[in-house]
Amino acid sequence: MSTLNEETNVTVAVFPSHEDAERAVIELQRAGFDMTRLSIVGADYHTEEHVVGYYNTGDRMRAWGNAGAFWGGIWGLLFGAAFLVVPGVGPVLVAGPMVAAIVAGLESSIVVGGLSALGAGLVGLGVAKNSVLDYEKAIKAGKYLLVAHGAEAEVNRAREILTTAHAESTE
Image 1 (cartoon, one colour):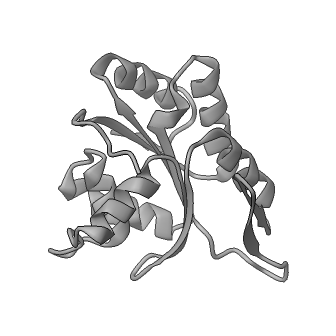
Image 2: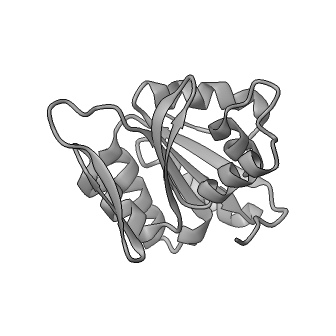
């Protein structure tokens, strides 16, 4: 497992729907943003009366349910995928480098001081600790986080794109 380098430049955008988040990912991809530096997190509890499931087919993860097509497409673009049940937040799906950050946090026991595994992953990518609770609340409310990290110039460019891509907030 590769570790994240010491760059802590990060921007986080909150989107109200998976459609808005998906459009933002596509805009970042079109602009040439390094997709290995992008993570997405969303809650997974809108099951209604449909089957919800996740499975791995070789090197691709697949999903069923309301947002199955969305997650299937995102998992094809971003490296790494996880389904987690985070106490206080509930079931979440994660794609991108944040998966490794969450696992590193769990393995090194940095999930202390009131941080959830999700919070530890955000902090591991460079998100300010005092912002974590707001992001967890957003996910709990059914919103989606896009987290871009890397060199300062690249993150600033990503922030500009995310700001114009109908994000509710961008930090």
